[in-house]
Length: 273
Ligand SMILES: [Cu+2]
Image (cartoon, rainbow, N blue to C red):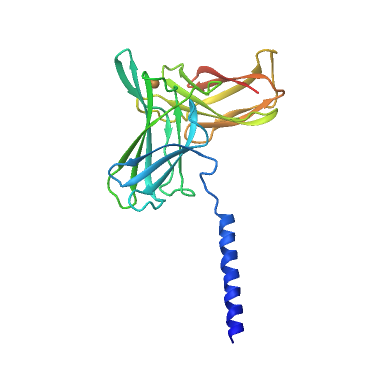
């Protein structure tokens, strides 16, 4: 009898420990490949806010991730309404002004693997006292009626080559055009993606869905282009996707013509690989 009990316990022990091992393997830290940019408490909603990203912050389209925890218990908050607002405070020889930038809020109240994903298009780099970025994150936990506000200072570096263009369109509107893909260009056909936003005022940059875009890659140093490109077309929220074909490594310029209401606006992005 004792022997059977012992065997049963040993068996149960084996099952328990093997289960634990399995869960160790399955659960992967969702922040494993991310960098913590900043954190702050959301005043008024008793939440700690952490801002994460795949890279240090650079000018251009920057994917961001927010993780929330209860500031009392430390427990992760996986269901909350989250909104971001990047703000740059500028001081140009005593003349002070602030502006925001194009942004994409989390699409759902539910965190994906404990992270709320969002994005900002940083239109200029941080520069000492004359240009300082901060990120405001508004949090409303499930059951709360008001948003709490977290604010954190962030540093934004100049992307090299430039990954964002602010241009005046043919109809007079100010556009922000962000290069998204290919992030790591290779010889051959690459997925191509840009996002287009319109400046409504200093704080509001809605997605621009009404352009038809022509894309022509060229190698300026050699005077040739490439075949088999596919013009980017609207997917959603101002994002346009197509295909770009690089026939060799080197310096490429991607020429873009944005067409709307019979008027054309041109811009380009350079890359070297
Ligand atoms: Cu600025």
